[in-house]
Length: 470
Image 1 (cartoon, helix red, strand yellow):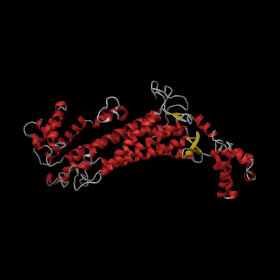
Image 2 (image 1 turned 180 degrees about the horizontal axis):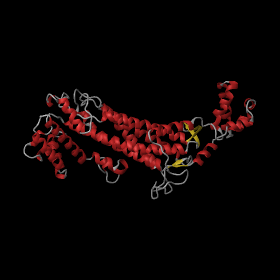
Image 3 (image 1 turned 60 degrees about the vertical axis):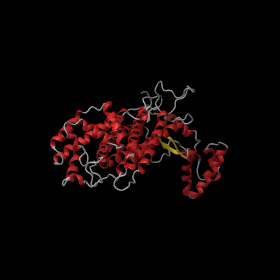
Image 4 (image 1 turned 90 degrees about the vertical axis):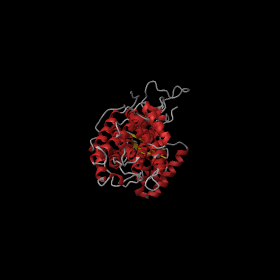
């Protein structure tokens, strides 16, 4: 097995997507670092810090460099010899620069200037990808919430049936949460899209009298903002990002966990769309396991632990601390890859979700009317007080439950209740088509919010019952 599972030739597509893997592999990182160094040289030449001819030759060498096995062997051997994170790359590039132009590489800059700047460029791309993925998820959830606005089902607390809700309300709750994450992604964008050009201790002392203007120009050329202050020891930007990934992955996990539970045969209200050929067990051939829902939990746990690790890196010694900063190199790729896979899986899961509205209603009926006990209590409360009504309905419900009696029979058998509520009143209060409160209205509000952002238009997805096809 590979050192990291996302590199495994067998398992990698369960832990990452090909698109994002390319952004974090050695070739992409090396290419990005070289590009940043070339832009730095070009900018420094504009400000008269290094010869223009040298910057031009560095740019040509950077464009023409072959990132082949020979190149990476050179870089690795130089790293192992010097134990310096980027010197091997710099020297390999220097050897490919004509004349003595390579002497001007990274003039006045430190390694963290190069790597932090490239990290920001990567995160900008990742954020854009995540925004697109979440737009698709919003569309899926809007469709579910709209179609099932009035589909009644059990609302459950502590794992037990509580009161009637609608499935549309449940989907709207997921949607509302995802919408908050979309806004958080928008808000974090300006904080992560910031370059780094600070020098040895962050003072820009090596970049001459126009250092701040040079810094501004350097960042602009790379599509980034310039920082108000050097952030070599301020890692809150990266930590905020990874904690946002933890929130997003946790929401995917929450949705998957709910589907996992509602797919259990004894509940049977939701199920993952079945793909022919999928095998749940090599010993139990009948199994259709909620594989996607389960794996969302695995990925989310991974991201949460990486976010916690990143929080440890907030504490630095003085102006730079390799213990903290270098930890990001191990944390960030894994967190981004796992979160991306979680979003891709959630999109797939919701797009092929099978909703069994009939089973939802049957499960409500199977409660024997107990899910409407609150309505009975509230109907009695104006006549005897809420606390007394609670005691009365509680006693009737508990005694009836012991002998598996329907709640209706227990209520009619209670003299105090029968004196205040006729049989027709009780039947009305126990009507399973009633009692979902403001579920529908909240669905409408959440859908209106999505539509105000140009999302949530109607689209087709998996059917009410039966098996979805992919």
